[in-house]
Length: 462
Image 1 (spheres, rainbow, N blue to C red):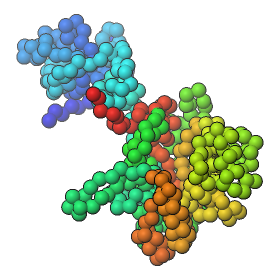
Image 2 (image 1 turned 90 degrees about the vertical axis):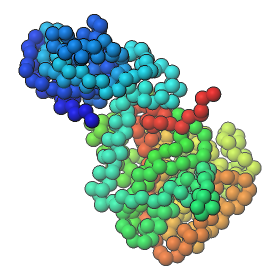
Image 3 (image 1 turned 135 degrees about the vertical axis):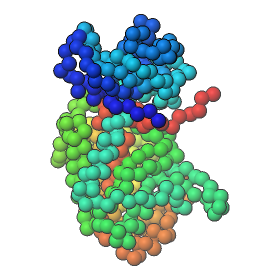
Image 4 (image 1 turned 180 degrees about the horizontal axis):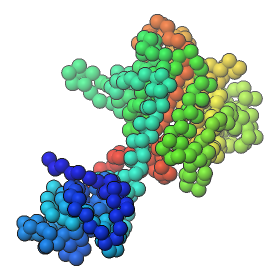
């Protein structure tokens, strides 16, 4: 154990009025990593988690044993230093070292301090080195921690109860996604890493644990990797009884805007070449309305699957011979609209075919009471008016089962126990999911999801 009494930033604040050339008799002990050695170790730049402090090592101040240690020091070593505080004639706050203690020896050399880790693959594979070299990387992950902490506090202040649900599922559900599988030896049982916590959270709603509950959860989807996708990701999922999806719009706006204000000090954020305003309220536009604006085609006037597929093909969307009307609408939206939604926008009117857990829209049975929130062309939030009719939910699962049997591995599976839970009665409710990784990307102006995950999934080298 090594007990230090001060950090670099605390010393800067405490001695901000110490004038150049002035010495004190104040004794302090600090600990950190050597980032620079000058004049044969006479001057050391020592970095801790808060900043940098200069250390002065001189034969008139150090015992022979400590002087011998100084000669063996290398950049990257972790040391403890005890001494007195002064400010050099050039104005640098400095510790006159009296005792040097080696805490850990760096056997691998650090990258050049002026260039750091320039290779992105190495930055992500050896995050520990990236964090040593890059204050920007450290600040990104620290900001992520603050974002999650603020999110949790804001929800608890609004009366939400935080819960935990299983990460191993007998039946993967809650999202249209391909799962990772594993084997439970003791039970001799095939299990799946969860793709979403939704169905277990709604079981808790059935049980009356709370009218408002949430989970900040890790999910796993056996899908592709891209600047916006990692197979392991973090999201917020919450449910509130006796409201519908419109209440979820207000919560999404409130949370994202309040987090930005508290963490960044403003609801206007820079991202790449854009300035994005997160202040509520945000526009609400239907998927069909946005598609018509971009393409001139009104999908609500198209009545059959074949015509919808043909229109989608003509517009360059990715559809197949099995695509239904709603699949075609969603494909055109993805191809022609998503990337244009830079400012926050709630996209409503999602087709029934791609929304197996959302209530049917009262105005048009082809649509559901669902929205997704887009910022910078990305889906950041997803919300429904939740189905609480077990008969309707069973029919949706059976429709998904037919899709699955036709070859779609991402289609939802039939969860009979969840149907049983709904038969005990679930209050009408709104549900909301927010992708925390993408939100952190936005609030840190990070171009890749790998920048905001400490240890992103990587292909093994060699």
